[in-house]
Length: 364
Ligand code: UD1
Image (cartoon, rainbow, N blue to C red):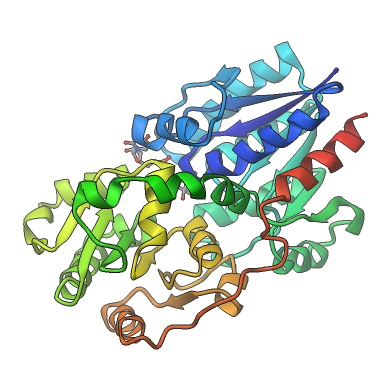
């Protein structure tokens, strides 16, 4: 039996790994697939709820690293994962996305001579002020197998000199999870619970340090939400990083009554909120993809996107994160002038099956 270990750490990792775990069931006679959770995200709403919603088994390993500076967090993951690689020596390690746990585990495993796959490889924002961009560049440089979600990823890897046979354009496992959970999202009661009707609200997520760790920027974004609330209800599930700053800077009292701050939603409830939103305003990476797959208008308040296909053919519009640009994009959508959008190639719900087939052929 060969042992394949997938790493999760932060919220956006869980939905990328869940379908990979399911897909390896087809190879159960030759491969054992296990999950390791670094504990980068540890609140129940940021972690446990996702295991439940995605039918993921409990992780075989839990490192419990928690929060800290980038160096502290990355280092703690490396030390914890070092022990796992040394004592349990998996045959193959899969890392996903671009969070600190991704680079930490890739770097640790390759030094043991363990073959490493990076799922969601090749994405580039070309903004090195984003910690995720550094994590992407470093992980792609050392991983053996690079699984790509969109054509831009293939182009960037080839440009960086990666051998073509290491690059696999397989589609998007995050969208596999979306297909899997959508029937349950359709039955979710979250809209009734918070008291909003379909298509009658804007859904907001903001957690990028560039938007929420700068007091003036966060205040400006809150002004924007108050103005949006003049036209439509605003539902804002708040990430712990953002919540902390809103509290610390006393911003809560400035919010209009039509801006509903709620706790981070679980995966199924968040899908339910997305699929019925009039539009989504975000600075997330994954939500640009999920809204594209759902064909829900999305405004991404950032200067760059590492997921250009969502803008080129999807429903996503990239707007500079300033008041005028965001509100103009909001008006365009609320005036019914948004783009319908297409679903990108291979975002068909079967990416994880393609990944499992390729990895199993390499493991044997
Ligand atoms: C991380 C990822 C980011 C991803 C985001 C999704 C990196 C570099 N960043 O950012 O790419 O989009 O996750 O959510 O890996 N906190 C809690 N409870 C938790 C987790 C965090 O209270 O369960 C608080 C802590 O105060 C912590 C802060 O949130 O310091 C930030 O958490 P961290 O994991 O460092 O980065 P994120 O901003 O969540």
